[in-house]
Length: 77
Length: 436
Figure (spheres, chains in turn brown, yellow):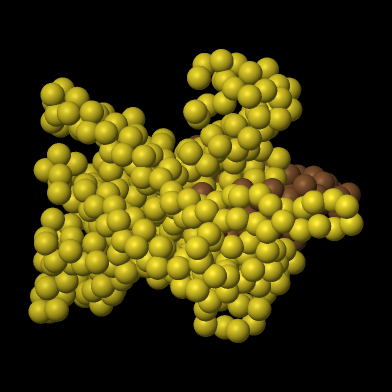
């Protein structure tokens, strides 16, 4: 059971990192990090972005559940 | 002020944005307390109480909101992103291709952001590996005997590293979601919550160890510092710019007079971050080369005595000088007087009494150089202030100390920025704002 969860964590972690990297970056680097310009891009999210969001959310939930599961197993077992 | 709050919450669009932001922040705080798989929560708590000397990790711990020493899922916090942003920013000076991308405008900027994100993941893997290695060797909590990670098989350690890396990417995503759909800049808001969340605990620490009177004095002092930081952060020199009138057809265009705002502290908190990262390097090197058995060698003792010890005058003055240097350095990277003068010339603008082109650039450079001097000294003073009050805050805590130094600078900067954004949204509906 624990091994299964651990493998699940690894798979979902890698997927999560890849999915996040697939998103279009909106950070804007350091210049806007600490009180820089106030530019906000008005471009709405496209269908691709929306589906990407949904997939990321799903994988994220799986990731979270498996981490909590391992934590519970360590505590109980 | 309160009326502005009410009208901010009464606007459905703004209310949704604010609630969305708060929701993400709650999610982030939850993640910082969730222990990574395989990390024993009980042992971590035991060690955390035993060891209060943090030294080298204090900066990283500051940016992760205390999550690092808990070895939680979000242990690395926002630090890999900050580091990679700094690296990419510096590389634009060195690598011509990056310089080109930066000048290209929106599309080039997007590409640079994408590079920053890739580098963030790479750095996250590195840092996660480093921290897990330190934890396994028992160096994360020096002197604590309970194993933080009970099951030290390679597979288990890999799981922890990968989880932390994924955690960093999730933080990045959360930050971008706030920037995109919420209010304010996501990344800086996440740092803000990390720092703000520590205030009650730190305040309680002082109250318990020093008593009510000292606590009261510290609070008054902290408020005074915050006020003065707000005062300087808002300060700017307004260089008047006049635009020439133009006739196009029968219409008259231009002829307006505006100003070019030059902030006193153009660089923000970035010089402080640079300087403290540099000062931690010798400490890091001496720790990595120290063997547990033999006596520390001469230079290691020197480093420990003068550079690491935050009350020694060598440390304080070096820190101060580094901050002044990096302020000038960063301003010269981000603000280019020649470009500004060129732009002004293109659109028919000029500073009254000064010719467009090269003289304008020289004038801007002169004004900027002069205004940055008090700005850099102010940054240095604010940053070293907690070092002078080590008796109250306790050794090794100074950068985390929420009433002075880096923490206040970041909090005030981010707070002002966010309030301004909410205000500009409010302005679309009515004219009452937070700031007058």
